[in-house]
Image 1 (cartoon, rainbow, N blue to C red):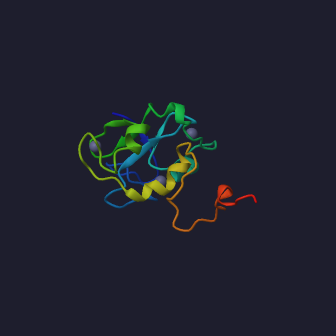
Image 2 (cartoon, helix red, strand yellow):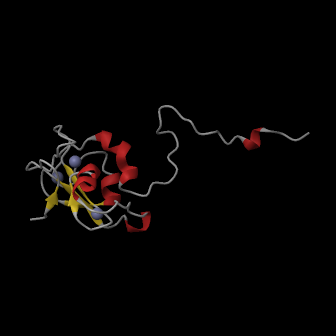
Length: 128
Ligand SMILES: [Zn+2]
Ligand SMILES: [Zn+2]
Ligand SMILES: [Zn+2]
């Protein structure tokens, strides 16, 4: 069975930080290749900073479903609409807000409720 590390882990990989019914995934950290329940568990237990998965490594199986113990490639997890493709268990859609702790994300337009980024409207300015 795949080893998952974390603080106060339960049988579905919930940890001291994330304990709702939907918090059942563990994530293999790029830096050490070990599954942790969450980044906070990694930072508490590992002796090194975490690293994010670059996009060219997203075919790596790095997500563990705590319900069925299937390992999902990162790409598949990000595309799965918060439902395990293997067993149908629901994942926490709020994890979306933490993906940048684990995966190299590009610019993420439209997913922030309040945008503090300047809008690049250069081509609306016409030269006389
Ligand atoms: Zn690590
Ligand atoms: Zn944790
Ligand atoms: Zn599953």
